[in-house]
Structures are given as C-alpha cells and as structure tokens.
Length: 149
Image 1 (cartoon, one colour):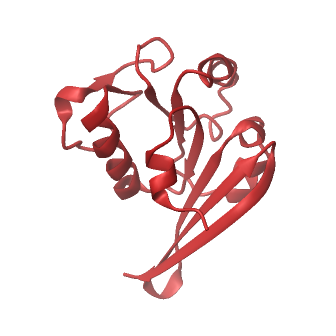
Image 2 (tube, one colour; image 1 turned 90 degrees about the vertical axis):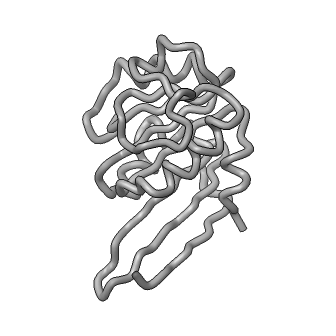
C-alpha cells in the first residue's frame, strides 16, 4: 500500500502528478517548504510559507524540491533532458493539468518516475486518486482512494 507519507519524505526522485490535483500539490509544497526552499515554474497554488517558494526555471534554481508544469502534455523534450541530470540530487515534480494516466506511464518520464499520482473527478460527484509506485519502469504497487464530494 502506497501512502502519501512516502512521497512527502522523498529525498530524490521523480513524481508525476496528473489530473490537476492542486489540493494535493499544496499539501506537498507546504510540507516541503517547512524544511527547505521549493522552486516552482509558475504559481499554481497559494502556499502556506510563501517566503520559502522561488518562481522561475526550476532546473536553474538551487533547491531540493523542483516543480515543473505540463512536461508530458506539451512534449517539452528540453526539460526532459534536464530532469535526467537533476534526479540524483532533487525531488522533481511534473505537475500535469490534464488527466492522462496511460500516456504518463508510457512516456519517457514515466519510465524513470518513482511515483505517479493520478487524480480524476468521476461522474456522480466522486473523486478518485491513484498513487502508483514505479520501479525500473514497472508498476510495483498501486493504491486507490475514492471519496464522495
């Protein structure tokens, strides 16, 4: 069973978030910004600790936590190459505004990701959150959470 605590405690690795889960990104950024500065490509959320957030190109900013936006959705090959160099020293988040679970898993980033978080609003007022652990390009564990809105 994969828990959010594992993701919060990561020291290095790649997390892909798909489906525009702003509330979840806020939780992660708030926890990380208590420990260290977080670099974000653009303001997606209003953090609890705004003084611990730097906006700009996360690949050029010095931070352990770096949040990029729409790498897979916009086919940003230049960023994918930069991420390969940063993975050993930082936690990288690719925040995707659209939901595409299969496309994310099959992408170049999906092959090197450690976690994939997929958020989807279901019909009839339900929300579904899948947290998938990936090792060597293969899914090793998956936990799904469902709540009625």
